[in-house]
Image (cartoon, rainbow, N blue to C red):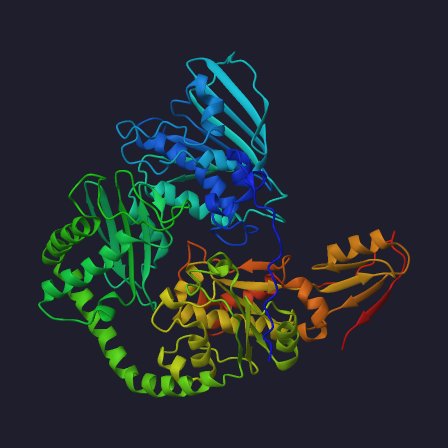
Length: 638
């Protein structure tokens, strides 16, 4: 009996010619994720276009921190970004080098930029390389030096000229649409970014598209904006020291809400400083009240913000979203953890002793959380047993291969695309299931309209089988640390019932898992309302104007189909809308309204204010056919 030998591997000519050396520009464009994280299209707050904006503003902030320039002007249109500071300006002889030579900058000397954000000399070079147009201008002592680039290549380098402008730097760039495909800037993301800069830099004024942003009280202002005065259990505690500032209070929302910063950088994923704050609050509270409260009860409904200054901080990626520093200084003995724990222990304890009303309110909030946890323990245990059995044969969940945080070796780069589609009905979920990417996209199917859970206690999450299975599918029962999908996409029909289901799902997330929304994980799937086609061309349209434009483009008698539900779109067609060209609308919380205010307005009792809003915003829509387009055969799918 003869054994079959395995086939020989294909021959590859691996020799000296196989080795390539890329210059800085080529490498950034070939591997942009190493420099700015994920690319995206602007629908997520951490997409690449916002990182480009941040890298430029960070340099302006560093100038302000060093005492140069109190004003920054930012203008952002659909595709063009302009940032002007009034600092010292880049030394004129180094203007080209600073934006086009890796590892070139003024921040390597820690005496000049003691506690700067950008230390590795990469930021503006990445912006330059990833922009179709990039112009830098520096003004110093009556001289202006400019340079113009395209995709990182120098195209104009004129000699300095005289000017009467104030000292400072102006950067103008346009992200390259061959890399950032179909991108768009969402104003709310930019405004949040700008507000954080102002909270962290007292005395700084930023003008964004003519709107003025300024903060007088730092993190106190941040928490005032992020919380509702009526639901705060006690006045915001605001503590400041050398290299540290923090603010905290408790509200009525479920979960924990934190905003953490290092050297003015918003660390959306936390890090060593946030871990230390969470530990320090628990230790201090236990020692102050001389009672071993459960850590979860102490931190339930907490809203906190912390900002520290670290010399030469270490981040876990170029995008600087998670602090990795162990020590406050590279060669120092002060640990980040020890520094924060010691500060909180001393100053928070002193505050609680001096403010007995706040101390009493905090104790009552902790004990309320303790009662709610114990009250829910029985139903939670029973529900989890049912969910465990259901998970073995969960007909509602059609899972995918890759999940968030589980693919360190072979799928880490795919994690940002991990998606759970939540849809209603067999036909809609069937179309998505057949057309999805099984590696990255999962589907959770609802049966009819979910319960309106506004005003209900969290016990309902366990008592309602559908809610319980959904929280287990997402793995968010104990917080976002175990979240299995980066994107949670609500996919409903574009009719009245679909909109109602959408509202009910958003109410569920905002009521019981608000961090999921705050951290930018929840989206609405946009699908086309119309299909316009002739025998050669098919165009999918997302609104009436796009339909009219498509009809003009195709000329005589195009066929127009109105999609009334997701189930009416064939799986082959659906694949085009959830693949590379997926259109997602992020769910964004406005900073000037609390979650409970929003939910009470839209999902509470039918108030006169809501009735007036509905009446004032009623629209009568007609199916218009403009005079320059011939009548069409319009097919309504039933």
